[in-house]
Length: 376
Image (tube, rainbow, N blue to C red; front, side, top):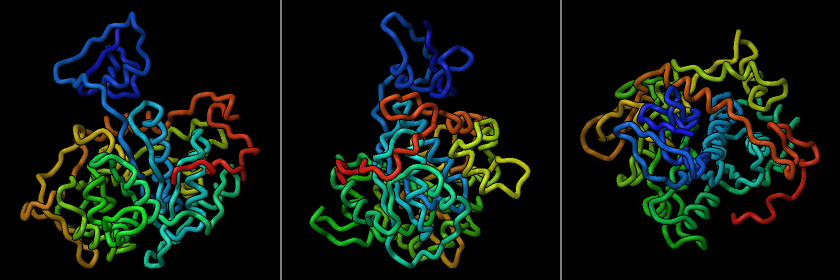
């Protein structure tokens, strides 16, 4: 069989001339020794390691978080992501249980989940987290989850230097406290030094109103302005720091969940959030933040590196001084929406041993001790 690569392709395609792959890593997952490869000029033929990703989310109040977690599981199945942990940044008590239920649905019940333990983020909106936690298997006991900052420190300390990507799609609460964290038994480094040593890219949660280079900061920063200011002030300038979610305000995905079976966990998240709407399509802020974090900026127009500040819910970019802060907007929204939608609709493969087929989870998985052997 002939497999085709092109810079404009995507790894959720089938590798044909009309629907080429984007990276050689996608070909490596399916190719046989007798297959051939046709690559267009400009394609990087290097096999790349999966992105070591920490996903920091305010899941429960908007369905794009759930759709983004589905997107991440599609990336994992394609060899593009190693999901190190999910962090919950808000005070929705069932947020961690909801995330764990989604991970379990996609056959990954053992992904570590941390929850911010501080009270300075006041967001408690819950459109679907409790609904999901009450109806789908998970093994989270609300109130007994690991502290997000401690889990961040444990995971970062265990990773190679400059290897971790953090994608924040909610308030910066956890990150603000991570940067303020002191040395401990996990690492002799304080939070700023630990992040500088271990993180290679940071995708930020601001600019939801698409106002950069100047304007209202948007929902995520609004809920914890102090943490946002701390994030912008203390994030090491050696780390590329990009606001990639702005185009999501007018880029809609998730409509395809209307064609999924009733009870499909992500469809239910969208239904619960969109129940007053005429369809399930929703803004795609969070998907774009993760898409950029995993696949880079080829599909975006990215500003030159500069500085970004936030004051009184207003966010402003300046080309000087260069503190490695950028903002990005999608070049082709139709193409981006099509690629994101295809990834989001991905289903887990049949796994008889796990008792999961096509995304259906056996109720007997609830309440077991699947995290006993976690490293964290």
